[in-house]
Image (cartoon, rainbow, N blue to C red; front, top):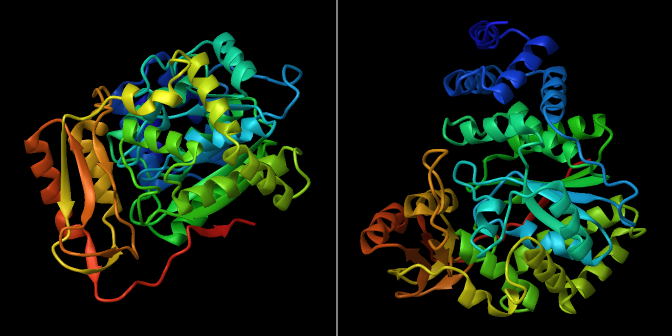
Length: 437
């Protein structure tokens, strides 16, 4: 079956049969489809869409493209996981996985790299010296036994079709396609042998979904395909009109996550998202009877340091130092140049250029222009203001962490006009937009 004929069929708006989809996925795995053909197919799907049945078939084919893990009988707790559609400064997974582990769940979290302007959990964890994101099933199981959680990448054996397509989508402006998002997320999650999953669908100027209509459609599609595959799933739409937390950039976000678990500088919005999503998992997994009981246990896990202990054990099990958390500020790589972007007037922050901050992080070297680009884990932003913050002339709007002075000037030019300051406080926007039925 010729690749160009399958591409032509979708390009012209026709429905793909399972045989067409299986041929596409097989071509991704055995490289009988070139990068150019795979990119053309991704663009055709973005422009013409896929029916529910096509999306189910694509997800199934990508799941079956490699090994399917099975944890049943190996652990006393349920296998639970969370997935975010991506946002700027979204470090929820770094805290949520050890929180759920500390509450009795097993979290075999197969995560991804940066996609478009949004950061990737694997890129963040690779800023920890020694941390390995590509591991064997045996090493992943050992980490789960030691820490209760293991945040890793899909191995060459797990959903290999997605591994290739993911990198192509990142650099071909095909990230937003709902069918491709569904197949990418769910093929890895279904292959990870989960009992339940919670979805965090970001919406706003820093998300892939910039409007609520698209976010709802994406959440509904993901939930429908996951539920149809027998995976218990809950979904929330959450706000991404500001950086989640106060940092953006790989090592900076890891440090903020560690400090959060240590009880230092806990951002309220970040904490609320973690608490609500983790509670969903504990209830779905049968570890708690209701949300109230789950949230009470989550609070104990965070405030008594149990989550931090699980994170430290995970880092150690996956190649990092056993005392990483105690020395995170000294162990993580640090950018040689730090310069502030300053407010020139007083007032209240009305709008933050969240997407532009994500794009600026890529310009600094913290993300990719091309799939093969090497990431600089040191760079990014800290001390990022949020809507509603009161500022004065000279207040730091964001601290730039860069490899050079010229990089600072580049991102200053990108961002300075994007911070909108008004004479009165804006209407507050909730971080929890809605729970999908």
